[in-house]
Image 1 (cartoon, helix red, strand yellow):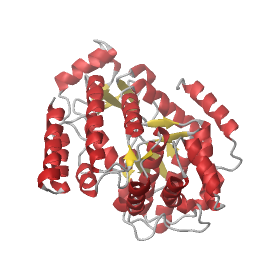
Image 2 (spheres, one colour; image 1 turned 135 degrees about the horizontal axis):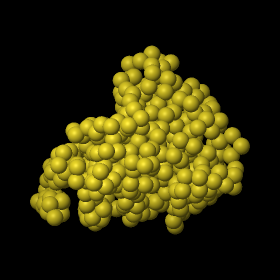
Image 3 (cartoon, helix red, strand yellow; image 1 turned 90 degrees about the vertical axis):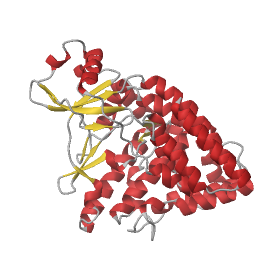
Image 4 (tube, helix red, strand yellow; image 1 turned 60 degrees about the vertical axis):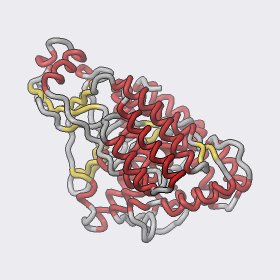
Length: 429
């Protein structure tokens, strides 16, 4: 009710500005205030939307990106009740130690440090109560919010974007699914000894409590001034941590937040965290990724259109295909260029992709609208997130050669088989 009232107030300010004149920055500030005064999934969605280059007007993106994904932690009496509900009345006897204060609190739950009886340091991720009903309420508010944005700019039909974000939010509430996703990533990255994934503790986990080994490392930002070879090594590890599962299994880590990467040693390893937002693609989608790159390299417009069709873009004509190619040439640029290079020249991390997205939206206003397929949403978002990380590091790599290595011997049928086996192994669908 509070979110709805706040958003209604923002909508009224929007309407008033259209009639009487006003500035988008004031409306955006009102919207950010409406969301910031309530903690929960919708605030997370707002942050998510702010990371998509030029999807929102710049004033909106700036305000929403400043929202903090931290909620007040539950107090100890509340924690005890929640833990009793998940592990039974004797839950405390199952731990040698259990921290009363939360080590971290976010929008969906909080993490407590604990110790097992055999001396293992563990993290207990405990979901806040009634999150399922909160998500369903917030999904409705998300649709209202996107309707408000669409009135400002009709170049993009966001209906499938809303459905995709809603589906991923619902999945994030299922800690049983996240536990299986952790095991999936451990399997997919088994040959990458520089990547560590927390080990889930099955006997101390439920659908709303996820217990795992405690891992620690330094934030990626700590290495922004490291020697060039160290920054390049971290960037290469990030590439394989993301593109390895994508091109090998059709699976992506859909949350590119820098906080989900911890750097270990002196830049020699990575801890990958938070597996609530995992996107599993059909093999045909990955085939579209590979085929689009080949088509761009060959200047084959018809091949590009076939790739877009594979991805699920609907009712495309030549003019709209040309607009999509503007964005595709930007995203694929580093892996088309066979040389050591930065991910982009003269671009700040927060501005990565914004100029190109602005041009795409300008053209779509003339030739659109276009409906963005659901599968494209997190693929695009994660690619932008990775690019921003590379920019922060100032990394210089031959992305072309790395991508070539990642798709060596690519076969869609083989990927589908490998994916099915891996998902069956961990019980994930």
